[in-house]
Image 1: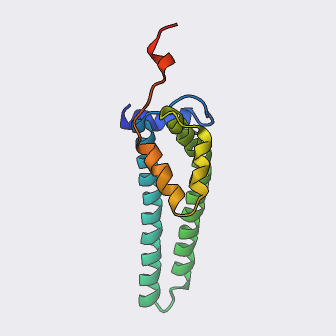
Image 2 (image 1 turned 90 degrees about the vertical axis):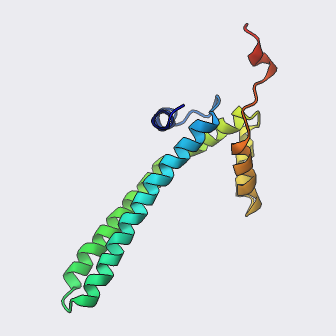
Length: 139
């Protein structure tokens, strides 16, 4: 599955918790989300640096400060909404990826264990696909 196809599939299977998802589909969706979230953070950083720079050089920088802090707040709200919108699809994709490596979807709850749980989940997501014996036969 290609880079763009994986992201389209990510949104098409918004609440699909059944089935399987390949490693490439999982990691490409993770990469897409990381790029988009990084863009939000870079925009916030630019506005914050601009705010600090203009406040330091202008004595009357109150208006500029309000405008740039409002822009930063707007970007922060957009980031929150994007993360909220991707929470369920990421959960569904992770469960489908666990199914692809012949693990139960309930293994996703291991991520709730501090420190060790996230490492275990990353290892599970890196495991190769395992087909069951029934998948080898045509019925």
